[in-house]
Length: 289
Image 1 (cartoon, rainbow, N blue to C red):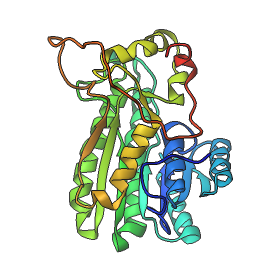
Image 2: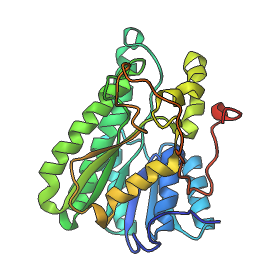
Image 3: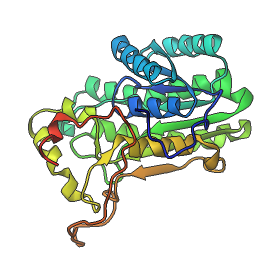
Image 4: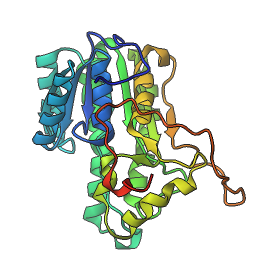
């Protein structure tokens, strides 16, 4: 079996794209789709064993993938990483700034270290990767960057540190699109809502118990798939989005819209798209379909 993408198979032929956080979840799915479309995918993350596994999956499926472990929160490490990747693989044509992470906690109980750690992971690391890819490669030949956000439009109660970081990344996306447009570099973002991804299995306690009920708060009355996020990322990286820059695309089934004054009716005709042949359902959602 191969990735069942809606895009043409040679879309990214002869191109090199970096996917941070490529060892799991949406990053893993996106890396598979890009490789299936002809790209040479460079996987970046902190845990070598996870990156190795995904690279092996892509290779087994007939794609091209390499990996390099790096803490993207470390400025000097990021500089060295990008230098090494360019030396080994040539110009970087695309960057998927997917790496991130957070934990549920009310603002009143988040200490400074925890707040700063989440901001460094979800905002500073993405900035460092984008800056170095631009300075060392894309400023010379153009390219496309897609940043990862989240549904933080109404605040992010219970994860205020992540909400602050994601809101910062939204603004960074807009600023970079203006400052780097002269070099032919497009910068956009995606903002997934509730997606059935392996990250759901990292939560415990009360938040874990809520996850199976989230679909009731989505007008489409379902949770999204990793493939639905990956497809949006691929579109923004592709020539079809050549005049799109500085935009953030929400992928949340309209969950971030509306108000309590409008009831959500029982949904019908809402079919999901799942082209990822290696996808699996998070444990927290099993037996809940």
